[in-house]
View 1 (tube, helix red, strand yellow):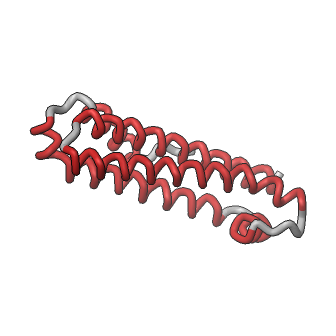
View 2 (cartoon, rainbow, N blue to C red; view 1 turned 90 degrees about the vertical axis):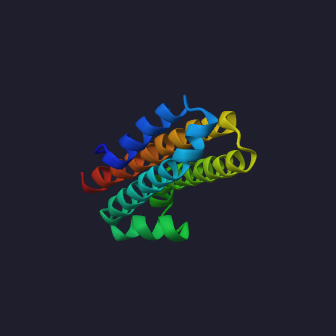
Length: 139
């Protein structure tokens, strides 16, 4: 999987933001959110592009979770689970940021940063799994 500039920049910003004061968070929260959104969008786009390279039967099995071909269904299930885990982690990070903003809590904002980075790592893992299906179906 190629490194995505948006994700790498967001990871750097999140690691930096974990050291910020409350005042700095208040000034920079929009920048953090925009960086997180750009990272999420870039990962979503790469995931879509990757799955478009799958044969049609894999895409259909992924979308419908069909049991038509047990081998194909078995191949896409781990990717589907990894995508779902990444999506849950993304929602958790976003809700942590929302709550941090409501409470003006830097400790919660730091936790949101950690959760955001974790969600991107999970999404990258899911994309790598999806990429392996491209080569396994063409080889």
